[in-house]
Image (cartoon, rainbow, N blue to C red; front, side):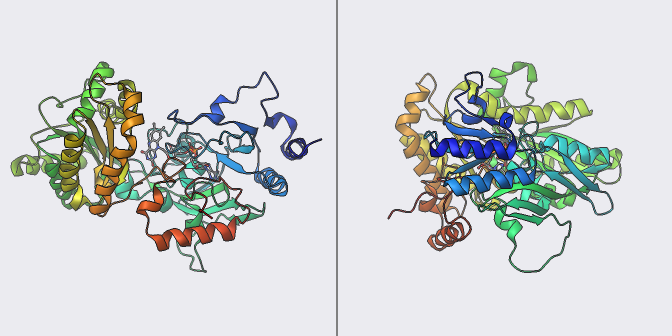
Amino acid sequence: MNDSNDLLSALRAAVGAQQVLTHEDPATDLAAYEQDWRRRHRGRALAVVRPGNTAEVAAVVQACAAAGVAIVPQGGNTGLVVGSVPDASGQQVLLSLQRMNRVRALDAANLTLTVDAGCILQAAQQAAEAAGLLLPLSLAAEGSCTIGGNLASNAGGTQVLRYGNAREQCLGLEVVTPQGEVWDGLIGLRKDNTGYDLRDLYIGSEGTLGIITGATLKLQPQPAAKLTAWAALPSIEAAVELLGLAQRQLGAGLTGFEAMSRFSLSLVDKHYPQLRVPLWQDHPWCVLLENSDSESEAHARERFEALLEAALEQGCVSDAIVAESLGQAHNLWHIRESISLAQSEEGLNIKHDISLPVSAIARFCAETDAQLAAEIPGVRLVNFGHLGDGNLHYNVQAPEGGDPAAFLREQESRINHIVFDSVRRHGGSISAEHGIGSLKAETLPQYKHPVALALMRRIKAALDPQGLMNPGRVLIQEPR
Ligand SMILES: Cc1cc2nc3c(=O)[nH]c(=O)nc-3n(C[C@H](O)[C@H](O)[C@H](O)COP(=O)(O)OP(=O)(O)OC[C@H]3O[C@@H](n4cnc5c(N)ncnc54)[C@H](O)[C@@H]3O)c2cc1C
């Protein structure tokens, strides 16, 4: 018996033999667990372990800690920064939360929902909706991603403008520590000043400090009506102006503000012509706006029309439509959500999920677009994102007709430097909502304040002294 076999026996004892998947079994295909969403990395796990409850997670973590074996937690495996798949060593245990997918409780009077960490986001949204309430966390991966993954990566999405990101929507957590203890912090309190905020520490820690096994989430009343509008604009400056106007006129009713450049929409038009993208050809930018109203649809429409009239008069909007039906609104959102897929259809590309002060966005785009065009002739920018949160997906596509793989190999590092240096000059962040994972772990030290980085390392060392929780993610090994 070698050490791996001892560990596998302990894992089988913890969760049952059927829930420990290994390469030894030729009938088992582990590709779905070992390949990341963007196909940037394919790892190899010692085993994929699928616990069914918190006690089993604790037993798995204890067994791995005793054996000194690293754990990679995985929810829906939809993360975009290579954080949820094992490395290539064949020595890491992949802990899948997939089977822990229960809705545990809904407290309508307290406006809270408590779920297992492996609960799919869409299932949590539906549980809230069934009680006439709203869980306002919404992203294109919601049919596959899990609440644990959303919290571990502090996901954003399309309603951050009004409701905040995953962090703002979480009141309590249940966590298994790197030593295998269970912290039951599933409280539904809006106020709890009893010391350090451990919940906030675990949110956004990308599995490097422990395993989230459950969460208590904040719910909201459902709005009486939700309307969507699509506006065509002359420039990104105009988009920033429209955002200010919409915030003043709609106040808390403004629940979505997504900007899309003409080239990003041209890719949707090219690869998914059936979606019939409106108004994109003659205008450099389009914006999708959502207005959630607590009174009625008529009231929402009246306010939306007043906003768009003012914007047309002011010149920051050139043309606009307000969706006439839920189906039309759904189609408009579908166009926005199809940009990433259309971009993948066009070929490999370099993604930057960045944030900036809203006031710096137009200057950032002008300067960075110009620098990239000058240094890499023919480069194509797929620029779109959650403008209302200052979050751009500032992605770079190879020149038309070029070899995307060669472009990535030769230009990725240079392009990243140009973009991230510009982000820093404009007071922004190199990761707005996708996290660091292993994709940006090498880059982080160049852009994070050194004192912040040192504090992060000390926290990691204090909570996970063996360094077994998702190693190589967020923080790279310190040079000795
Ligand atoms: C089509 C598409 C659209 C997207 N849109 C958005 C968007 O609009 N906004 C946005 O913010 N993100 C977006 N994302 C990325 C986003 O981060 C993920 O979709 C989601 O939040 C990750 O959830 P997951 O369950 O798939 O986590 P995974 O991918 O499985 O894991 C993500 C990270 O969290 C860790 N982790 C997972 N579960 C746990 C747990 N229970 N305990 C501790 N650590 C854990 C993993 O180790 C990994 O580091 C999108 C992704 C796709 C594919």
